Length: 362
Ligand SMILES: [Zn+2]
Image (cartoon, helix red, strand yellow):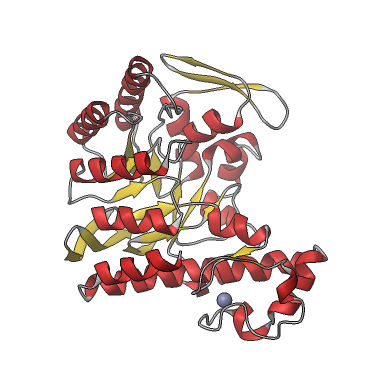
């Protein structure tokens, strides 16, 4: 994997990541393809919008259909017909957020499947094996996602596990697959610093920050983003995990983060919440009943070019499948366009103006 900084505007930066499967211009938004599909979208549609990388969830693919099945069908790219870059998470976050029952041990975590209640175990070895048989381009280390709130003692103990597991994952890294370390440490600066230092010493292909947006107040999260970014080496990609609220993205990009993933645009689309250049709207509202205008007059997506708000409201209330598709096309297009314009503003040296303008809208 190659990484080059193209342009900086204070700490914000435009970079180019190159994997064997193509180029990724950052700051980048990675749509979430949880079980091997970005919900409601075909790979062709994603490419047309400008998607250069998507994320898949190891936890989900491991439980169903099983990584051996994905492997026997040619690996994750062939399986889902996506020939560009794929980042797989390690499953850590889902084990902590979805599984009702889990028992953490020094070597990994026992957990109960949210699908059928069966018991499973994932440790660093298993996480790397699963991601290797999926054949993702970028793998993530298994981390112990510290819940919020946590005491200093617990956060420290949890961080020690994360560091130990990261070293084990690093030892098991396969040639041809990039591996990112994950900084944890809850809301404790001292722990975040230690986490960054130890992981940087191990030498990963990129660095992610995890354990944020897990219920803490926004101000605390922003404080941690500002604190953590400068601890990460400038010559590697920086990935802020699971954060995709565009207001938070603006802050993170300002501090020098490059990569983002979030279910927000796709999940909101299915729930009828749509992003526009004038702010968020709920398409089900009565005021749109006879509205013949496009969803967003400033948007050039397929949905906005062809359908009225009145129609989108009608098919949403009728629970039509097309509603999910048209809404998702629009929201993802909006995100890609936002990131494209954000990169342009960094290249032109006017990121601060871009940020101020959008903070007033979002
Ligand atoms: Zn649109």
